[in-house]
Amino acid sequence: MGSTSRHEMELQRKVKEELKSATDPVDKIRLTALSRGPGGIKHIGLVFRNMDDDGSKSISFSEFRKGVSDIGCQLTKEELEQAFKVFDRDQSGEVDYDEFLLKLRGDCLNPKREKFVQRAFEKLDKDKSGNITVEDLHGVYDVTQHPKVVSGEWTEDEALGAFLANFDDPQNKDDTVTKEEFFSYYAGISASIDNDAYFALMMENAWKLNEKPRNNKPGDYKSKDLMDSFGKRTQRTNFGRSGSDLKCSMQVEERKNGSFNRNI
Image (cartoon, rainbow, N blue to C red; front, side, top):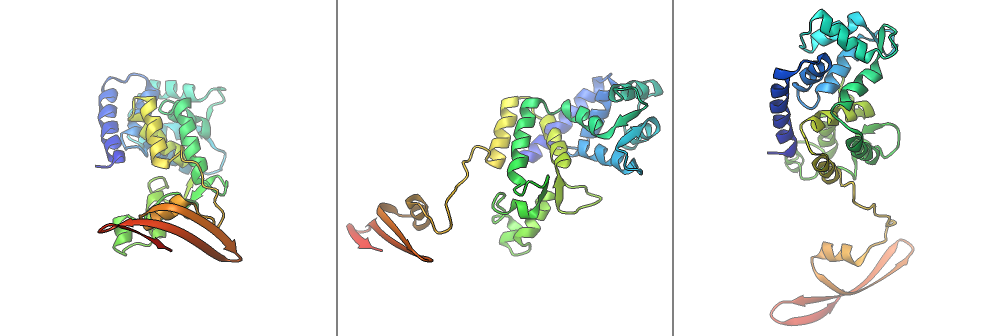
């Protein structure tokens, strides 16, 4: 079972337990959203975004009440008013959409964890556009061993698109993931993990955040790279370049029925 599946199961278990004893209406909203899985906070964001017909990025009380009901969270009128006041910080009668999501996410994604999500997003967003696309994932996320790629059923781009669908809006799949969608997804994952160190390790391993970028220029190779490619032990390696030609002189020691030297 993959680690994401384990996190989803653990999240479902925790949410069920916490919902039984939850009394704070904001907690009830957050937990109900998370009961849908790691993408639950992203989903509630989409619900409220779709209500924003005028593009004001704000939510009225009536929209708030409908949105909470649409995700399956049953609150009394008093609880709705109490929760709305928490989000409506300036008491304007409207809730800023971004602040609403930040509040829900913040309860799951503390500043320490947020830094790791930010690092992952920055690594994936290679062109610094603020969105992650299939093109960004090339060379960053390896799908060559995906069963459907191996079988020829999918191209690599199709597999990368399927990966992005985990974060994307299911009602409007465009093979583009916004920062909001990425952070909301990992807020859901974070909610299933109690330990900050474990969350950090998961992010580092998943996205190889501690891996130093290789700055080799085209045509520049290291002896270790060739060693790995040939599967042999390099005794001495000399390189020279002339124009577009790579001249490689390498002495390799082989052991087979005794030892002998061969020049390549």
